[in-house]
Length: 325
Image (cartoon, rainbow, N blue to C red; front, top):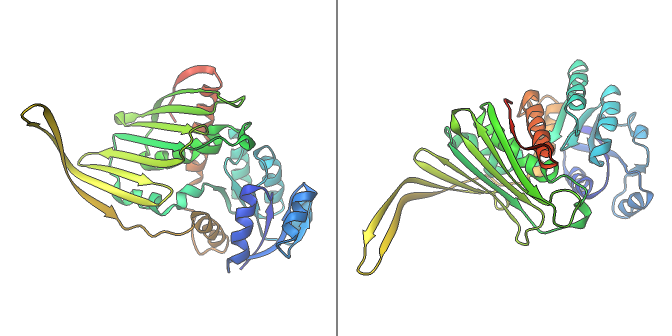
């Protein structure tokens, strides 16, 4: 059992709190939030010591979850690592690749676990992708939902698209040759929707759509590869595979009809709460029961690509960049 603390008790912090509270692997010691009203609200439901200064918990814990606003991640994570604490920090770890690299360097020197909270990595369907994908040539990802003014000042790339970037980079594992991005503002000062095309070496293409102004929530990915079309639903954690597709024509009396022949299989997926699995993996890494499921290099690459996309959408370099990542 690991002595833990949570820094930041907003939406994600509450999710972490709920799960740490019930997990045998976590011995939750203290909660932190800068807002006293938030601390008071949490204290009504949980019997944990609270504080407005995260430094007060460092002598009482072995590991911390950082779920504070992104702008505070670097400062908090650095202090925790320098104090010898293992850190699970919500994505994005920072909005600066140099700061992120520095944090991982500190963790390595002090032999500490530092992980980024990419919860979709622990989605049951996503974890099956390595077993069924084989050199895909077209990937289409869709992550859309209705508008929430609470997130109007957040980057949709670093808030939403980074999940899909992370999964796609892990799946394709080839150099990127170019990135194109288009988006627009609807209600917010930052883009509310965006489409991004990532071209990889050997001509694999990934098209990613994200939106926070689409009334119907949708979280899906489709993968086209030789002999198979794979359809993944993040929400239900389902995977459907359509194999050996053959398209032909049938001449009817009055019209030309198309037929599509394929064999269909629904893959069995072990389903659990992805955030719970993420926290358990972090704590198991702290206790030496597991090794991290992605390399530090992959952690940094996903952030680097997301920051490049975000830069394109803000117009700093037009909407296209030739790049090798």
